[in-house]
Length: 213
Image (cartoon, rainbow, N blue to C red):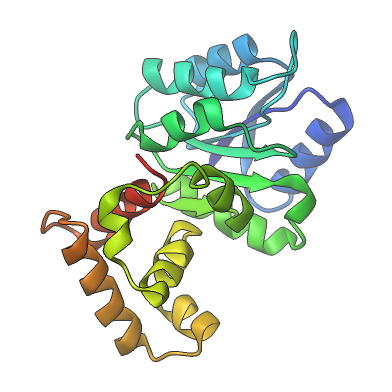
């Protein structure tokens, strides 16, 4: 699996490169700014890009803006944001922009390398991997009306879907049966009026609704 890394901190950039090299990934490029990220994606067409938010020259939201530009020029590019910060201005746009998988994890909350690698693989495969704190901040501005019809339990299930959890993992987390989880998911799809299509696609649509798309 081919990866491009965009991280301005040289030590972190080198650390990520070594970590992923040791886990069977091919790091095609490791760069330190937004324009270099776009160029690397155009050149290498990676399966996934791992991107910090704040990079030179202003250290504000260059990583997110570069990710959007990379996805515009190379559709279906999967992006895993790995940052200390939740930047709302472009994060929602990246998540609802369609195309490849999208993840947003907070560096300080990544406690297990294996879980990070699993999340990266989910995103590369077109799924989502969102830190619960990211989800909480992105929806803090208010939910769209259809979500108001969901029960508290359905919102819990939808939040775990946003993290990229499988039905089995959701069942374990909420101490439910998988059958119970499936019933909640069916109800969520119906209340959000999601089209009848492949389950994975509807899960992504549900996540986008959850993030106030």
